[in-house]
Every structure is written in C-alpha cells, then in structure tokens.
Figure 1 (cartoon, one colour):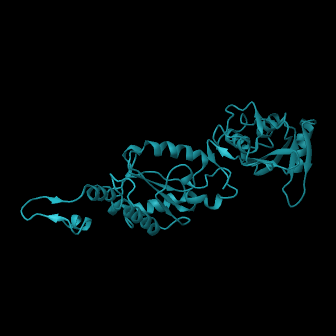
Figure 2 (cartoon, each protein chain N blue to C red):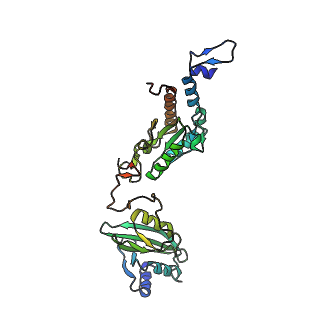
Figure 3 (cartoon, chains in turn red, cyan):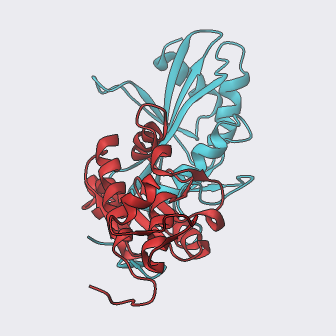
Length: 170
Length: 159
C-alpha cells in the first residue's frame, strides 16, 4: 500500500476488499518507471562511471535499473561515451531492436554534442541525437554517478507524466 | 653496433637499395632505403649474426606535406642490445612499399594501420584491408590534405 500511496495520494482504497482503483495511465507509468531495464552497453570513459553507478555504492538497482544482455529485453539505453561513426551504425541497429516504449539517456559531452572531438574528430558523430531521439541529456566529462542518477530521476519524472492513450498530452 | 656501422655493413651488401644515412641531432640517426628492397634488407637485418634485429618496436607513417609519404621502422635487438631506425620514402602518387610482415608478424597490423590512416600500400601483404575505420570509408584521415567528408552513411559529419 505504501507504494501505491506514493503513486497517487488520492488513490481509492476499499475497507474489506483486497483491491484498489486507479487510472490505467498512472498504473502503467508507475510500473514502467519502477523497472527501467537498461541495455548493457558502454562506449568509453563514461561507461566506467556508469559501471560505478551500477555498483553497490551508488546502486542503480534501487531504481529498478537492471542491465540486460539483449536489446529485446531493454526499456532504456544509456549512450555512455564517444559515438564514432562506425559505432553509430551499430547503435542505430540496436536501438531499432528495442521494443516500445524505449527511452534514451545521452550521458556525457561526447554523446551530447561530440565533446572534445567537435572540431577535429573526423570519425565522431557530433551528438547521438543526430540518429536517435534522446529523452535526457546528462552533461559532464564524464558525469559523476550523482549526475547520472539525477538524469535517471529526470527520466522517471518524464515517464510519470506521459499518457498511453492521449499521445499529445502536455 | 651503432647506426653508422650498420649503415656501412648494409651498404656493402645492398649498394643500390640503401640510399642514405642521416644523423641530424637531436633526432636519432636513421637509414633511408628503397621501397622495393625493404623486405630483403629487413630479412638480412633479422638473420645476420652481428645484427639479429629480432624485434620490430614500431612501424609508423609520416606525411611530409611535400608530395612524399614515409614509413618508419624502429628495430631493436634483444641479443645485441642495439637499435636502428629505417625510413622508406615514397611519393604520394604511388605510395607502394614491400611488406615486412613475412619478417616480423608484428608488421601485419601496423602496416594495415599505416594503410588505413595514411594510405600507404604494402605490396604482398597477406591480409590487406582497413583495420580501424569502416571498410566503406573514403580517404586517409591522417594525411595533411585530408578533407572531412560531409556525410557518412547518411549521418552528417561536421559539427
């Protein structure tokens, strides 16, 4: 009950029945944001920070984020590092294999905008948003685990307010 | 043996293929040899009793920005504890060098890298293709006159 109260304080509870009433949107969003399975995917130095975030000290698991070995299991992908043009082709392929709904966190300067390679990096894609849509950008080079967790919380906020049926809800 | 002695020895065995010896301090001395004979010279350097260069420390490439490219061979002998630098200079219009991967296997990937980034072609290499960049990449990025392509596979490249 504690969790459901957190979902909606005005949730309707019945005295004797073992059930609650809530809206479909709120229930689905709650389920989705509480278990964002992440695709096991690391690119560069940001991936080291991502691994640190997964480890026991910062503990991704308490947000329900579990690394999955296949894009077909994953709800979310963290683009953690420099995206070379060679890798970009592969990322697009992996992204296309993920089932809807899927979310993307762009982690670090490189995947946000090319980072230090913006001018002379002939081989670097200048921002992952040139090939796939990004939900949350996490700045930093590389971002500390706290910053990545902030990005995850931002993504949870975004999911909390989305609507399954009314696609264009403000 | 020092580089000058090695040069004199090489010159006596390969009078046409060994072109020059340079000792411009503070740069380490180096020997310039012909692109067509480099494999034979390297085999000699490896197998000759007094030389025994059993280790190719590095094989790198240079663009001099004057219509010439070069491959640089850094050799070392664990037996005699001496080293040698060799340069092979080729024109950009026809950058073909004989492979030394039959002499030292290390050269296999190093030569592929020199081809990938600088466009030096190594003749008779057993597995000659790009090593780092995608197979469909155009151009050789470390050349001084390299222009970044506008698009790669539909992705815009410049910032």
